[in-house]
Image 1 (cartoon, rainbow, N blue to C red):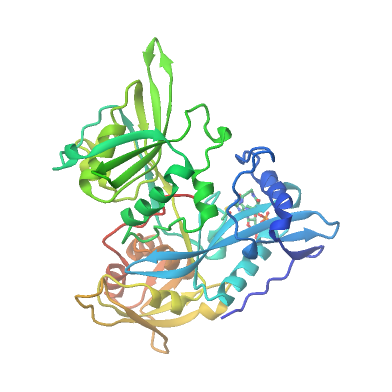
Image 2 (tube, rainbow, N blue to C red):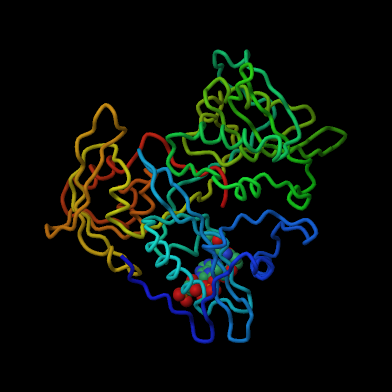
Amino acid sequence: MTNTTAAAPAGYRPVDLPAARRADVLAVDRSAFPASPIPDDAAPFPVPLDWTRTTGLEHADGTLAAIHSSYPFSLPVPGAVTACAGLTWVGVRPDHRRRGLLTAMIASHFDRSLARGEAVSALFAAEPAIYGRFGYGSAADDLHVTLGRGAALRPVPGSADLTLRLERMTAAAHGELVHRVHGRAGAGRPGWLERTTAPLQAAFLADPPSSRDGAEEQQIVTVRSGDDVRGYALLRRKEAWVDFSPQGVVRVAELVAVDPAATHRLWSFVLDLDLMSTIESPKLAADDVLLSLLVNVRVTRPRIADNVWIRLLDVPTALAARRYAAPLDAVFEVTDALLPANAGRWRVRTGTGGTDVVGFPAEVTPSTEPADLTVDVRELGAAYLGGRSLTAFAAAGLVTEHRPGALASATTAFGWPVAPLCSWTF
Ligand SMILES: CC(=O)SCCNC(=O)CCNC(=O)[C@H](O)C(C)(C)COP(=O)(O)OP(=O)(O)OC[C@H]1O[C@@H](n2cnc3c(N)ncnc32)[C@H](O)[C@@H]1OP(=O)(O)O
């Protein structure tokens, strides 16, 4: 299903960017992101790119003007996992912007992803206004909370029996542990991408002084039952003194655990570090355990941001790749301005659930029956991970119901018991 035209704008040509062009790629990235925390070339930042998936646009004068790449992810979706192209490192030099370079790169990204059999693309948006026009939908929220020292948690049996260790984090000592526990902790959560390659793990754990913003080196707190590591928190403390009193800030980059006792033990520790008065959470899912543990949720000072964005590149394949929370038989009229093969009517009919599977599998077929719902591919992508309500989109005029009852059943079926989240930005 390849039906975009990935032509470069006049005066530009598409170019593959192998590892030999690393310096040119970094130069465009630094030009597009002036604060990129990449230290000087003497201490190379681990560049996590897959060079076989990195391409760009070169001006006729030989200047590399635009770059992008993608990761070959296995994306957890409701009840399953599916192949996904994780769009990343999109950058256009400021002196070449607004000439259609991103538009051309997106068309090329769609073509190449579809040719590889990736029915879904995901990304983190630098700015939320960029990607909706290309059919990406914001599929998850991340919640950031700011807590005062000593915020009280409800008790969890077994928490006090677990031991803690605080150490300076190094990739060599902790990389394998972080990867293993992260995967275990997020099992079953849609959107929970793992850092599956060594370069991705190295880039995530890199701790260059330029990324510390005056705080200490990255620390790791592990929580253990005997030798079994059951969770960790990656954090930095930043000391501050106001009117002779300690007012330090704890910045938690990631906190994951495999059971409630370990989660409780980690947060209890993080919320009570000496000399600290404020604790900033990492990205939290809308249903994060912390929200259930806090005695007083009013103290959280929450902020919300868009987490991962999803683009369905091949609608029938993508819709059949996930499971559904309830039985459904509905015809969707899908609009898609960029990938016309997706446009038209698709019948989504679930089979029967079983005791051995989570959720209901679905068959997705073209249909000539009247549509029950009309939805753009952007909203379908937004609802894909189970964290957005089609009913809420209908209330905003973004989904139309043609058969009474269809909207409620589709909303229930597309939902999921666990809220989506990707815990790290790629
Ligand atoms: C997944 C990731 O990697 S996210 C990282 C994205 N990169 C950045 O934000 C770095 C800084 N910015 C840039 O590099 C560039 O400005 C980009 C990539 C955002 C846009 O590249 P351009 O080549 O200028 O985009 P292009 O010319 O194809 O614009 C297409 C349309 O999107 C719009 N658009 C582009 N960027 C933005 C933006 N930041 N906010 C709102 N609209 C935008 C354009 O106005 C244009 O609209 P139109 O078709 O109605 O005229």
